[in-house]
Amino acid sequence: MSSGKTDTAFERRVAQLLDQFDRDYASYQYSLVNFIAEHLTDLSRSFDGDFQQVMLVAIMGQRRMHSLRNTGSDGRATRQAMSMTASRLADITGIPRETVRRKLALLKNRGWIDQDPDGSWALVTDQGDADLPVRRDLAELDRRGRERTARLVAALEALDNHPKLT
Image (cartoon, rainbow, N blue to C red; front, side, top):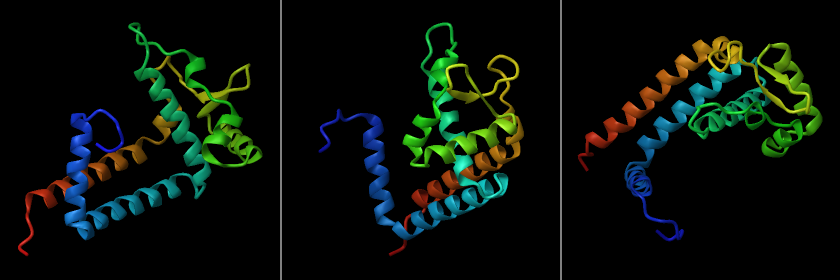
């Protein structure tokens, strides 16, 4: 590959899919935009139109999942590894720091995040790492998102399995 990266099975699959997407651009683009539009609409409704809160929760959730996936043999991630400062969140998102602080306060009021003594923020867990209030509260959104993703994958697979008659 021209990027200088080691050619892996993953990268080869990405290249194969890109070729397929290019051959039937309109169908792939329709499926993707349909997925994105439905998901963004669902997120907007779930967060009362506040996409900045969506972004903050998503980034904090990804930070948490990354920390949990990269833990040692005991399977435990430290709270410090899962938390982020408001300044770091502002840098990542491009949202002004004061706006980030206001949004974090709203998320704290929902019971989804809390602030550590060092000033960093993390998702709240009720029973160790087993239960996240944000996940519990957004369970129906999560279910719809998984269903929507399954429909997207099925639609893309169907396009691959049905060659065009042209």
